[in-house]
Length: 370
View 1 (cartoon, one colour):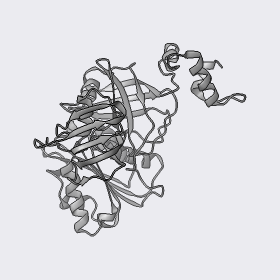
View 2 (cartoon, one colour):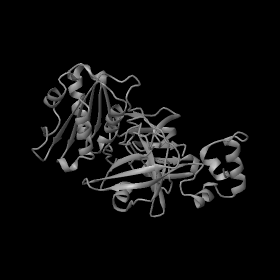
View 3 (cartoon, one colour):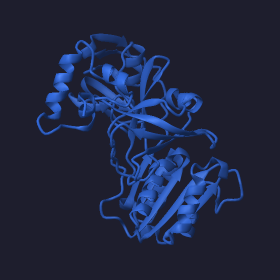
View 4 (cartoon, helix red, strand yellow):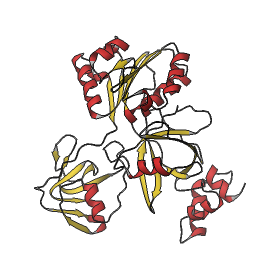
């Protein structure tokens, strides 16, 4: 086994992985060893997990599905997200996406379905340019929107749009585990053509007696349900819903509607939610003060948008992923001053607090460890 392959696959009997990586750093100076490893094989890396795109599917309007083969095993729990890194016009970007595949997929490949946003740099790039053979970066899985270790006997899954990804991963994972309980799966889309993996979902439901799938279409009449979510939909598909855990992912309107129904039924404690739409950020035209990025020595006039946007406008490149307050990869320490959370409107000014700069707007003078 060569030194390169030993670095990729783990420590051998006489040398630890950490010692080997340190040796590679010395030998490759002044560059990171990954600069040389990728010359031998683009999937070889010490610092990151790389993956090759093996298939691209653009059959669903407004979405692209990628199948990835990681260079080394990358585990995740159904419902979690991965950070996908790509280079667009010479700039590296990362975004968080939930695998749509089962966590038990035998070949180790990972499937991502990405909803395309008009202003989405990464989603538009993937939809327009991704091809089989491209190599991307993947970060370790994260997130708590996951099934409990002890699988429930009854379960409700509700999704809308690209929010289908984590709940479909849950459904596929349960199927691979031979889950014998009852699962009600409701998905909302404009038409049947807008449902990713629709044929696969219907086949899965046909093969598992405990799985009941209902598609609801807002612009067509050929679904099991029609229109936007309301309580009657849930009562029709899962009349027992008030006693079962529910996982909901999708636009804010859908999530809020399900939350209201579960609250009215006295079952709010059974609800787990995740939203895949960024919060609306209204620029504060009355913003004042100075925003300081202490670690970089950069100061700028407070423009009234999120701290992430202000940092980027100042020429900084903070780490971030989802840009909607889900993945927490943009979290930094607020050294002084206050911030307003755009999701809740709450203002916090506790010194030394950890804040997500993608969903927090500086209020007056504020300083960040960035």
